[in-house]
Each structure stands twice: as C-alpha cells, then as structure tokens.
Image 1 (cartoon, one colour):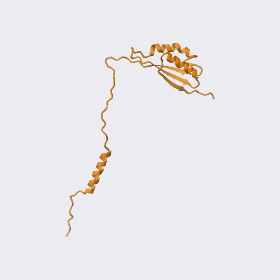
Image 2 (spheres, rainbow, N blue to C red):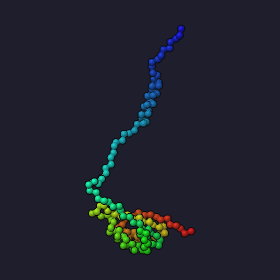
Image 3 (cartoon, rainbow, N blue to C red):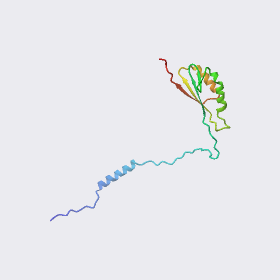
Image 4 (cartoon, rainbow, N blue to C red):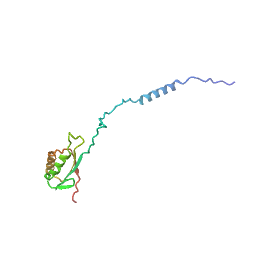
Length: 145
C-alpha cells in the first residue's frame, strides 16, 4: 500500500514575518516629508497702464597710462571729460517724475599701467556728476617683449 502525504494548508510564519519586516523597513526608509505649497508674490504692473521702460544708458570709460578713452574717443586729462559727463548727467539719471528712466551704468576699464592719481581725478569727476553706478574691470596689458 502506498502512503498518502497530507498537504499542509498553513503558511510558514517565519517567511511571513520576514516579508512583513522588509515591507515595514521599505516604507519607513522611502517616506518623504510632505512639502506645503508655497507661493511667490509678484508685484506685476497694471496691464492697462504700461509705460515703456528704457534700458539704462551705458557708457564705457577706459583709463590707460597715457590717456582716458570715453566711448572710444581719447582725452588727455580727466577735466576734458566734463562735457560728456554733463550730457550723461542731464539726460540719463533716474528721475522720480519719469519712472521709465532707469539711469546710467558705467563700465570703467582700468589698465594696470594707469596711476592712482588718474583714477582719483576720474572718480571725483564721476561723483561730481552723480554717476555712481559703475562696474570696474581690469585690462590685461600686453607687456613689451
């Protein structure tokens, strides 16, 4: 006679506990903190009343050892730049009555060969004409071989 093997309908508890702990660890590790929604308040202009905004006027001023170069034109002394600076002061400074005028930006390019006295005279002239929004750049001078 042959023997019948009884089939067990039970689920092995050790495997069930292992799977349960693995799922628990997975969900604990993968949990992300819920971020609350945020917003940025933007003060946008009124679409009905838009004034054209002009970009800031930019001028280039280079200080070399022998001269000043304003918009590519050479000047021997800082005092020679008075007329050009007066024009920028009169026509491009910010005006409270005209909010569309953003003002003047200057690019001041300094040579390493320029002396300190030249720079001091130029900075005094710019301050006198209320041109204070200046970006400074240093030029790489070619050295004589």
